[in-house]
Length: 335
Image 1 (cartoon, rainbow, N blue to C red):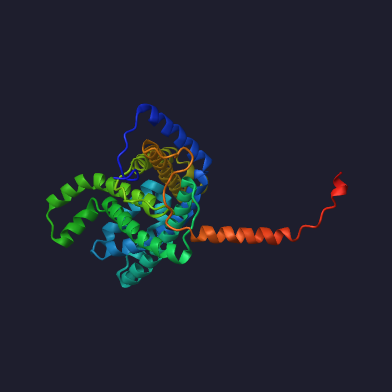
Image 2 (spheres, rainbow, N blue to C red):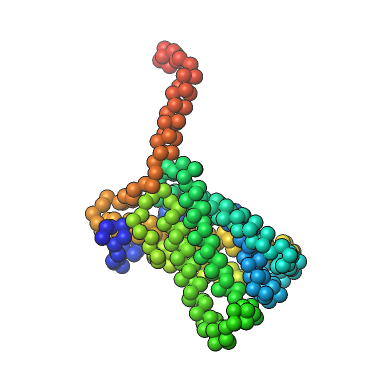
């Protein structure tokens, strides 16, 4: 077992060092800016994914229940006025006359947009790991699309676990010929299963996106677990603030829900980035225990370094070209 996938035992003193260094790296790496970029690309991916997801749910013959449940969730998160503004578009998405078109267009758009999100996430991970991006676009993009497919499947599973409750779950059970007992056990099991799938999704992001080669995918990591806990706490506190004080709807009107959604997305990505920094510091301790000099940089092999070498050569060529522009200096004028 190598240092890269071996378990690590951390003392109380080491936990203090990890906590302090995680906070310092989280701040120094400008994690808020990384989260803001991720939020932009996440918004681009959300709408085609929702388009495909709602259309797929409508195929089960529970369109009205799905619409009510979706609008209820949106109303809880973004306010009644925001949910009311989305009622007509949601009803149109569930219209059976163009469901297959919506599924195809939404799936392709979600796959491409999510791969863009993963590309940005990978560059953020590179900054956290202090490595450069060395993979050419024509190789990294197909890999990101494959990873995006896995992320979308996991994210869709989490979304289904959240939405398939109450009348929606009853309607789906009737369509599939299941009895009421299945719905009861479904309601009990869906929350822990959703949390586990969310942690797995985050762990996949940490493993698949950066330009470092890890031996194995860790199905669950300390950073992924911390990210999930931070996301849950952030969502609960932010939801309490939005619903309790009604600040955004009062200040922005019908756009208040959209503003609150964007801020919640930024906080969510901030939690994921925090988990990535924590995982990096856990890896540092693992390598230090193995005797590697990882105080400053981790010792992880790169997936590819071709673009690093190409960029280095281009910078050197630009430096030489710029040096030719410099006028000769008469040394006597400075004496």
